[in-house]
Length: 580
Image (tube, rainbow, N blue to C red; front, top):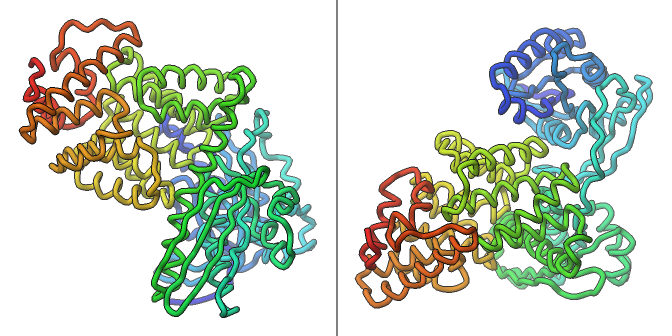
């Protein structure tokens, strides 16, 4: 094992996922030819070494930062020989690395990868250290992009963009990005008698900033901007106005003996209204473990509370005055109802959102999901599986790093009967999730539909722990998970309240009562199920031939990969006295 100072270059192909979905063989052939014919000789010519190739990207090391930057600039300026040009994002850092068995490790490697992820297509983004080492020595036009909170990097990192890469193909003109809710995390107050505990309170706030930065529906103010008011006795509303924040996260940390109490609240910066608050009490045996656990819990809750407030404000406007982003959020809140009428309303809003601004990736995701919900309820046309998959792929092509979009792509695969592709997609999505409780719960539901009951319960339980104030849709999921894990009383406890969102929930309630031998409750629940099914079908102009399992429950059959899972539900309905 050797250590050395080196420049690390990380590169990743732009649009790889969407091109693979269109034509795997051609994409792999073109990328291999590009790496072998252009990239490898270029790195060698600049005295670098390819450490490893990772699908659509690679990692290279250089003894000189000047060589690494010269290589990166020439790389981006070299025209692609393929019919459909291949473009890359590149990040470069300088730091101490560890060489072991031909691979490299260390903070410099992690930083280069994180910089690559936020670089522009066709661009080169470098760390502050690289910029200071090179200065004006290469005649490069540098552009300061400010400080960035990066995953697994303790402090925000200032990054510099290499300007003048005019040979890179221009980006297509797109509409302005949607205006996202802006949130600032203020430094948490140290209420302890020990000044040295400030490092702990700062660590909580900094980790929240990093965690929130993952959410595509939020714009997070940098640490440098929100922390510069620490020493000033300034009203929070004035701070929000100064840094352009619509929402503020405030908190305090109080340590007494070996216990710590962390209080946090989310505030509407304009009105000062408190939208959410929570208190966390912990034994302080392992400071970092407590910091991680509390941060994860807070980050899992905050985006949903902000989104709920934005939806509430947007709902006060007429639909014809809403922007695409507002329409998308309003439609999402309707879709969360998981019922026939709200799903139809959501689809109309989302179709309008896509027409107004085709660049809002999540609008495609939720539009695809309206077809998925209809398919689950047996209300969709024969073209719905194809529509769901085509629309989901459009969203993924616009943003292939949003876990919610990746999640939805998996459900589109499920509805198309592509079970193996779906399972691989959900495994991938789950590996990307950190604090996104809602997406985590839906991944759990997918594994339930795939017949992996215990894994589903494990995943959904963790999502519910992350967000104790989760929406009813997650209880709707967990109710079904408990049914297939044999916990029928738990199913009833979850589904007889707000989570009884549609006829599918009522079917599980009736089947649970029937399997438990509680005939009177089973009969009453079955009557409610039948009434709800008739209402759902009537909302789409579908006629019901008879009150039987094939007639009323046929739409549910295709949800599960294993026929015996559907049969377990159907058997309960028959026991409750629904005609076979």
